[in-house]
Image (cartoon, rainbow, N blue to C red):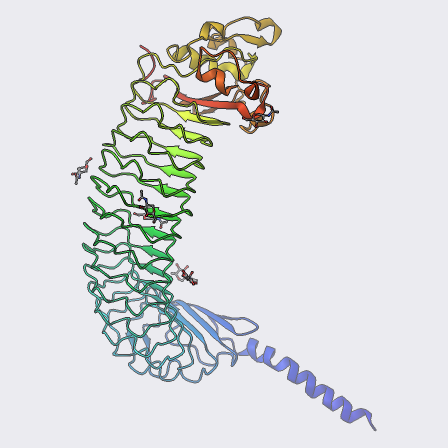
Length: 552
Ligand SMILES: *[C@@H]1O[C@H](CO)[C@@H](O)[C@H](O)[C@H]1NC(C)=O
Ligand SMILES: *[C@@H]1O[C@H](CO)[C@@H](O)[C@H](O)[C@H]1NC(C)=O
Ligand SMILES: *[C@@H]1O[C@H](CO)[C@@H](O)[C@H](O)[C@H]1NC(C)=O
Ligand SMILES: *[C@@H]1O[C@H](CO)[C@@H](O)[C@H](O)[C@H]1NC(C)=O
Ligand SMILES: *[C@@H]1O[C@H](CO)[C@@H](O)[C@H](O)[C@H]1NC(C)=O
Ligand SMILES: *[C@@H]1O[C@H](CO)[C@@H](O)[C@H](O)[C@H]1NC(C)=O
């Protein structure tokens, strides 16, 4: 007797539990995928309006690549739980002026990659809880000043890839919560000086790939929370003084590919958190003596493809944490002040390649004790001062390809090393033969092993003797720091056009050929005092354009 009502209840519970799942499967329109907890994704050109009979729990609806060209007055009706709506890649060209009145609960609307060229007045204004609005990839030429009125919760506004040319000065007024604003890839020629003034919570501002010619004074004032500012690929010819001074939280600033010939002094002061600053591809003619404020977090700095002929001696003095400095491809850069690298002791990589350097000051690198890689290739260096690498400790590689190193280059002595003349010596032997003028003591550079090669000089080893060594031998450069007393030679080849030969030698000995005595703390068996110099050159093959530095 107690049994049957209990059974009935069980049945009801079971039916109740399975119902949502059932209805979900049953009601998911064709062309759509309905996921268990509410997302629905619909794709295909059979879709011309929002599918009816979507599962009741749909909170996210993504329509992509459809034929839905219009959002009607009732398209979004009866979807009270819908929070996120996207209609993308669908040739959408019209939105009914009241389309969003029926769905004021929406938090996200993405209408990217459509054909919208106009928007009805205040069409989004009913969406008072909207946080995300993406209108990128449309044909919008103008946006009414009151278009975003009422969107007080908006966090993320993407207007990139449109045809905007001159946004009005109050179009963003009231978006006080906005964190992300993308205006990139439009045709903006002018931005009013107060356009961003209410955006005090903005974190990222993208204005890249436009046609801006000037930045108005004060345009970034008030953006105290801005972390990233990208204004690269414009036509900006000058910066107003102090234009970035409000941006004390900025960490990334991209000014590349503009038309700056000069930068006002102290432009990058008051940006203590800056860690990435890119200014390359501007026809800069000179830089002021005071430019960079204290920026200890700057680790990578790029200054290239400019018309600079020299730079101020203290340019990097405030970047004490710099690890990688790329001052290259400045084809007019001829002089470097002797103290330029004075105050960047942590520098690990320095690229000075493809400049117009004729001469280097003997003290130029003296502060760079931890330098690991130095690129000096493609300059016009005639020689190097005798002790130029003296300060550098540890593993170190230098690329001197393609210079005018014709006169005696007193860089290297290689004798006194236990050279192992097996296959791995091949590249070094070749390098020595082609660079007789560089290796001062080549008559004393002798093989210690294998036994049958003992006391042969390395430059007497003919390349044919190594024909059996066709396999390429590559060893980790770290071996040199762990086992510095063992001979260590690395040869890498790439399509026979370049060889890197590395030489592990005691730091003192190889710098000063006349010094044969070591201070006690710097005996050659003290591992920390070994340095490896990687010498890069190109094979004199017919198709190598870089072989002209070999002695005739
Ligand atoms: C939307 O459709 C476009 C065009 O067919 C396609 O390139 C894109 O990957 C699709 N995106 C998603 C999220 O499915
Ligand atoms: C900006 O800096 C201030 C202090 O300088 C700090 O209180 C605030 O949290 C920072 N904002 C961001 C987004 O880092
Ligand atoms: C800076 O702008 C250049 C284009 O001029 C671009 O190639 C580069 O990726 C940008 N860097 C960053 C960090 O955005
Ligand atoms: C380094 O930064 C400090 C503080 O920002 C500034 O006073 C000083 O002038 C800067 N030095 C140079 C060489 O610009
Ligand atoms: C910068 O150099 C390039 C070629 O190297 C030249 O065409 C251009 O006119 C120079 N710009 C300025 C402002 O000197
Ligand atoms: C190696 O030299 C460094 C100084 O360059 C010194 O601090 C260290 O004590 C030396 N180590 C040995 C084992 O001699």
